[in-house]
Length: 76
Image 1 (tube, rainbow, N blue to C red):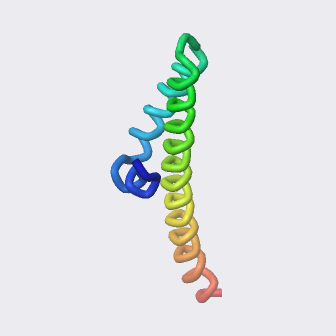
Image 2 (image 1 turned 180 degrees about the vertical axis):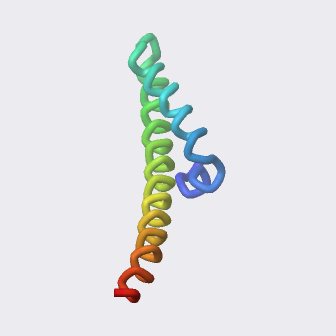
């Protein structure tokens, strides 16, 4: 699955929860090299999804703060 498809297909919380599970499985060991590589690749994809959502949230917060500050600057 491509990262762009994943980004639009799942939300932040779902990606985060799945990433936590991927890390747990990798840390626990007991997987083959091929399974570990597949888990690592999935983890990288999920991390990108989380980063995408967090960057979007940061942009929304920055925009809201800028709107809030703009009227205050005009009043001065």
